Image 1: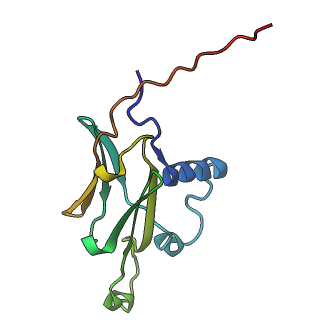
Image 2: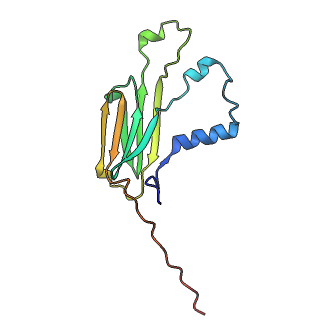
Image 3: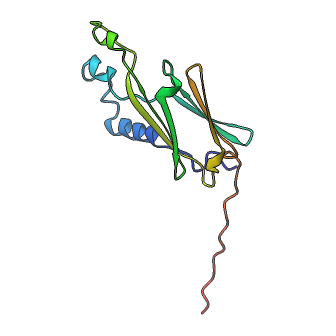
Length: 151
């Protein structure tokens, strides 16, 4: 059976996986706690099929719709934005800060043949939902005939 995600590729997740494999988990637990707190973050993303559509849900708690940008170019869907720190909080004298701030970017290559005019987005209760109509339709691979040498 063919996967409906054929052609779908999440570059951020792949880069994270490769980086973790190269370091063998050595980076965990190293460095100061504060250094990791302000490292670039990426929102959690679920990708699922719903009928023939591909649905991408990004968890963006604390963000407003105007803080998020979605672009689609050459078959690559990019969700980006910025989680801002309130100026008042910067002067707060924190001992522990676990909430993440800063900019984020997630890029995903959509399946080949995706109609870019059929992409819709909705933001509600801190969850961004992008629907790509028809992107989950299974397509059989094109079979190429092998020609024999004429001798």
